[in-house]
Image 1 (cartoon, rainbow, N blue to C red):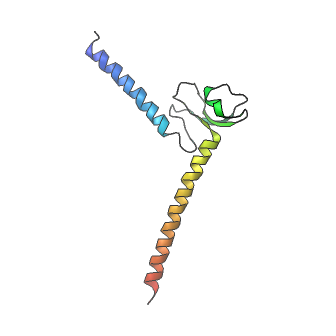
Image 2: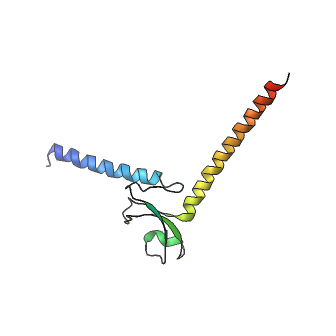
Image 3: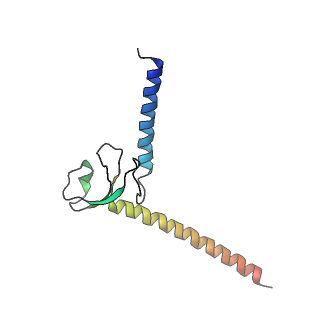
Length: 115
């Protein structure tokens, strides 16, 4: 039987690990700027499918990859096309929201400026 302090310490360590996995999954949208480990993101080109993530991509595919990448689930290695696609989708939604706001403001201005 382990000491309660050691047990609590181990549980805290496991909780931090699982929380980090959740943060990494949530952060996989759009173009990454930094890896959760603090490492820089670089654009990498895969010469051949050497990682298990390359199952559906062709050699020569671009990736956003953490500078300190290890295949342990704690670092970014995201296909370039997926990141750009997510970012474009987000920007389109933002532009649509702004267009709605501009139209609303135009209606307000034209309705108040008439005598």
